Image 1 (tube, one colour):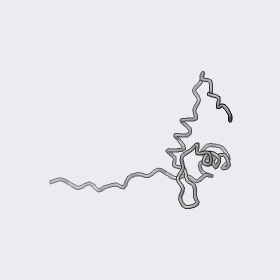
Image 2 (spheres, rainbow, N blue to C red):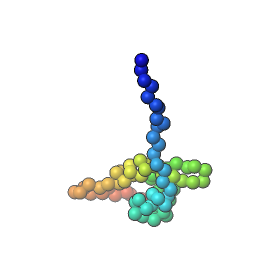
Image 3 (cartoon, rainbow, N blue to C red):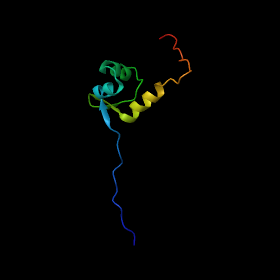
Image 4 (cartoon, one colour):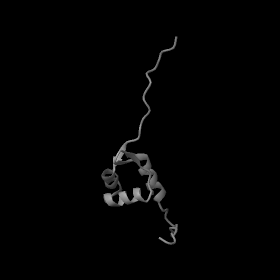
Length: 78
């Protein structure tokens, strides 16, 4: 006889508003909106509301990290 363990719903990422994401980054909401507009950060659109998952925000931060001793790559035409 096996005991049935209760099924847990899958854990969803926390959704942050643009203002919350900006506060976490230490920037303005305008900067975060520009990242969204330029498609430089993944986001979720709920009706007219833009939300950013904590996982996507953390990924953006990791991808933007420059290690000590490395030269940043220059973008041409920017």
